[in-house]
Length: 113
Length: 115
Image 1: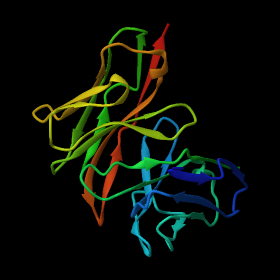
Image 2 (image 1 turned 90 degrees about the vertical axis):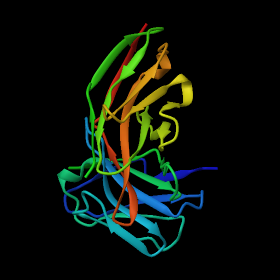
Image 3 (image 1 turned 45 degrees about the vertical axis):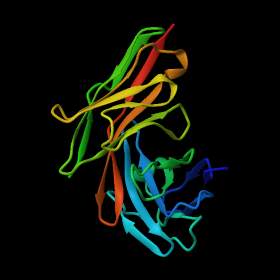
């Protein structure tokens, strides 16, 4: 199993550009999550989804959008990139149940210059 | 609301000596607690989890953690450090918020293992 796959691994954007970070999982998990990790910090939740067609905001949603049209895919959209969005982005997925173990992708390192 | 405090941002140990990474939490409800490890330029990997069963939890690679409700602590230990243990470790609390169980991460502890 591939688990959670994120693309691209690295990206440099200019201020005001837009891009989509891709995330796909092959574990048939109903829950999916997007986090950002700033240097020296823990992860902060951006958006999450409890199933296809259902999304909700996390702790730091401003400047981002998501959609969930299939169980497998949960793309994260940056519409007008700003330097404050320079970060490492992690996608995760889980079953909902006891313990709620989240499985993480390898991350996308994004720089906005 | 829940929160997690990792008491040390950096810990250095010599290879073969014990490891102790400290974590305190606060939560209004009975939490699930986790330790994740992140090796450089890698995603996060689950080390172990506590979900209200046994208070002493065994994880992968020889790591253990003990849930102490009276002290609101969930410290991570390993009897003998190995060079491959050098990584960043995150203590995480999980509670229901909104429509999903959400994770709150500590700020991380960087473990250095000296030869």
